[in-house]
Structure formats: structure tokens, C-alpha cells
Amino acid sequence: MKRTAECRRTTKETDINLLLNLDGRGYAEISTGIGFFDHMLDGFARHGLFDLTCRVKGDLEVDCHHTIEDTGIVLGTAVREAVGDKKGIVRFGNCILPMDEALILCSLDLSGRPFYVSDVVFPTERVGEMDTQMVREFFYAVSYSAGMNLHFRMLSGENSHHITEGMFKAFAKALDMAVTTDPRIADVLSTKGSL
Image (cartoon, rainbow, N blue to C red; front, side, top):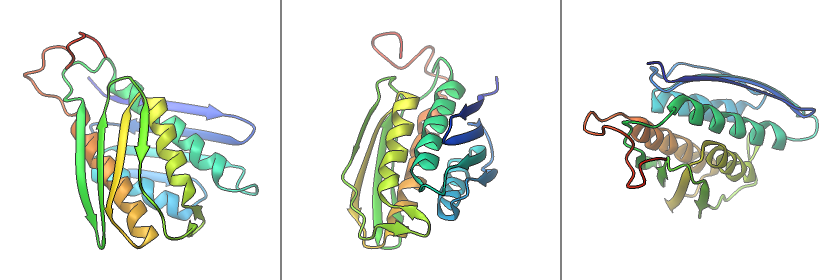
């Protein structure tokens, strides 16, 4: 059974087409109009071994906010749809990822209960054309659209590029772990019997 989702979101601010395959090989075709954000999404796909096609037309003449936040909404929705009924998945994932001087912890639970927590602080306001405050907005949108409990901890870090890249890669590895199936899990991994 293919674990894929194709999602589209069109508003007055953005037009987004996104295709996600949870059981891919890390292929990415990304075009958001924000070079550094493209680089982060490419890293997410490659290190999570997800196939991701993402085409975004946003109101970048305003700023990068709508483009990045709405992409998070659509990616979270795609994760929720692609994972389906969650039968047989490990459900939890975590990663402590080094990126030069930065060391980032990501832990998540595909519980169906959204929550986002992060203590990450960026030393600069921008990386390329991306506002660093948008990293939080992106992951918040992903967590709530996916129904995911998502936590980040910055164990060390001085460079905004390295910190951000560490977050995207750690998230990719944690999500890959969480969506992995285990033949010992006959239904859903919950005492409630549903997620």
C-alpha cells in the first residue's frame, strides 16, 4: 500500500502543490521562491528518505511569512494523509543531530494531538531570504496540521544556518523513524486503541 499524499492549497496569498511519498528514496523537486527554504526542504526529503515535490507561488513581494507558514500547513496535512490510519507504525521518533557547532534534538509523536515546543534561539534575524522567526512558524504549522506532538531542543549552536539546517534534518530523521512500520504492531500503538 502506497503511503503518499497529494495536497493543494490556494488562497489569495499562496498557491501550493505538494506531493509526498513517505516510502521514497530522498528525491526532491522544490520551488518556493525562497532559496534557503528550498535548501531546507530538500534536506528534509533527502535525510528522511521521503520523495517530495513542492511548488509554491506566494506573495513574496509582501515578505516570506505566508509562503513558509502555508507550506508548513500543506506539508503537515500531507504527512497526516500519507500515514493513514497509523496501523503498524512505530509512532514515536527522535534524533539528536550535529551540524558543525550546532547540536539539535528533535522528538515527535504522531499521536493525533498537536503540540509544538521549542527552545531554539537564532543569533541572526535572517538566513538568505528567509526570516529565522519563520522556522518556528513553519514547524508549528506542520505539527498542528499533522496532529503531531513536536519538540526541539538546541543543545548548542552559534550559526543560524547550521541551527536551522540541524532542525530540518533532525525532524526528517525523527519523522522517518516514527512512520516506520514494525510487524510486531498489529493495530495502532496506543492503549486507547486509536490515534
